[in-house]
Amino acid sequence: MPGIGSTQNEFLIGGDLRVRRLGFGAMRITGNGIWGDPPDRGVAKQVLVRALDLGINLIDTADSYGPGVSEELIAEALHPYPAGLVVATKGGLTRGGPNVWNRNARPEHLRKALEASLRRLKLERIDVYQLHSPDPEVPFEDSVGALADLRRAGKIRHIGLSNVGVRQLDAAKAIVPIVTVQNRYNLTDRSSERVLDACEKHGIGFIPWFPLATGELSKAGGPLERVAREVKATPSQVALAWLLQRSPVMLPIPGTGSIAHLEENTASDSVHLTDAQFRLLAAL
Image (tube, rainbow, N blue to C red; front, side):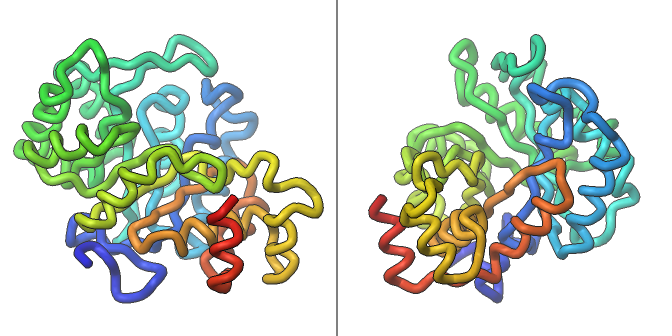
């Protein structure tokens, strides 16, 4: 299948960016409500450095995280970037305050947002630039077309989408190659199943956001905890392992501001579920 790497733990984004399938989401290295600075910028940067030490080479962020703070911290902690590190970012949302998210996917805004991300990340080209969300006030093809223009201008290497359906994915693919889709997906919310199947069919990386939402499944004595005991792992590790086994194009990006949680999450790709364990969780 196009896109799949040489081992079960690797994926080839766009045919030329080989990444470990378990990445790092840099949303939660900002302040409360994904707004402003984190409580300790030094700790946030230590988390980023530790992620690379653990072998992670896909970091996902967005201009709206902070806003701007996540991208700034990535550059402060990791620039000049080591060879093989893929920093993916997003544009198309604006912020009015903590936990306030507004859509703006107008071409002129996306162009300005990309230039600002390039400056903050200290890059001349973004490896993977993703449309954060379709904007109901803007024709979807206009938003994607703006990113296609920026790709032709050499400012974007590859284009991804976020929060889209199958029809929007197909419409975007008719304009420009799409290498990733980032939708909400986890053990308790699989509403993007058809999008995931389309990504698998076309070798497009599927980045599940909010991958660790387990809700009632994490209750003591529940199936998730039972499987975790059987495989000698934590429920969070099992939830991530299930995602990795669900599809070879799955690229989970659990985020955290804690080194301990980062280390726990990163060990998930060494957890193997039996077919029976996988089916038990899939049936929930």
